[in-house]
Image 1 (cartoon, rainbow, N blue to C red):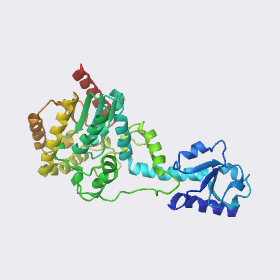
Image 2 (cartoon, helix red, strand yellow):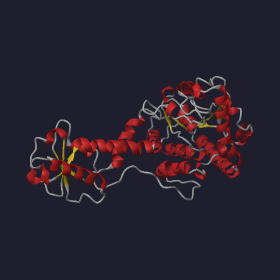
Image 3 (cartoon, rainbow, N blue to C red):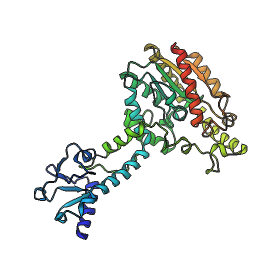
Image 4 (cartoon, rainbow, N blue to C red):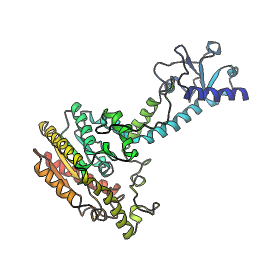
Length: 398
C-alpha cells in the first residue's frame, strides 16, 4: 500500500498541473460506485477526454488513468502498476482551486451570469451602475429585473453592459442607472492604482473585449493551470452559476463584510463608530472623490456617452431612471457641492427624456441604520431603496 499511495499522489498532481499530460489515445477508467459515476466526472473534464467504466485492469494501458473512490481502494488489487487518482482528493483539490479562482474574480463571473440572464426575454428591467448599485439593490423587491452593477464600475462600462443586453432582449421596458453626483468625472480605465486597472484585465476585457482608454493592461491573476484533462473553467462556471442565484451579496458574501473601511478602527462596523470616527471617515472618503473633479477630459467623454445612451433608450421606448444613490451626512458634509451643480447642469442640457430619482440627501435613509459605510447602503437600506425604485417604476409604466 505505501507504493500505491506514492503513485496515487504522483499521478494526482501530474494529472492536475502538467499541461502536457494526457495524449489523444489516453483513457480515464472509472471504478463506479454510489459516490462516483462517469456522469459526475464528466462535469470536470474536457468533452474530448475519453471516460469509460473500469471493468478489468487488463484493459488499462500505462498511459491511462484510473479514478476510484477512497472506499474502494483497499478492496482492489494490482493498482500499484497504474496511475491512480482518488476521487475524493481530486474533488477536494478542484474545490479549493475553483473557490480561490471564483472569489479572486467574483465580479467577472457575477456579471457574466447577469448579462446572460439579462438577455432572457422574461427580463423587463435592467439595473446597472457602480458599487452604489451593487450594494443598494435588493432584487427581491423589483420584478423581472437583473442587476449588472459592480464595484468601481464607471458610467462607460455600466452603459456598455446595458446596451449589450438590450441588443438581444427586445422586451426591456425599464433601465435603472445607479450613480453618484460625481459619475460624469469617472473613468476606470484611467485609474492610477494597479488594483483598479486590474478590474479591466479581470472583468471588462474578458467580458466585453473592451479596455476603453487603458493602453497597457496589468496581468490577470489566476489560481489554476489549464491542462489537457481538467476543464477548470467549466468547473468554475458551474459553481458561479449556482452562486449567482443567491445574488451579488448572500450568506457567503454578506454586505457587511464588503464595506469600504476608511476608518482606523477596522474591527468596528459603521454603526459601531463614534460620531467623531464617522465624521473623519466621511471626510476621508469624500476627499478621495473630490479629486476627480479635475478629470475634464473624462467628463467631456462621459457627456457624449450618456447622451448617446439617452437616445438609445428613447429610440427603443425604454424608460431610463437615473438614480442618484443615498449617502451619509458625514460623507456629504465634505463632498464638493460642485458635483451636484454640474450633475443637474448636465441633465438640463440632455436632449431626450430621463427620469430622475435623486436620493443623495434623502432623509428617509438613517445614517446609523441604513448604511454599510460612508456612502454604501446595508441590507436595510437596500430593501428601502429597492421598494422606492419599484414604486417609481410602477408610476412611470402606468
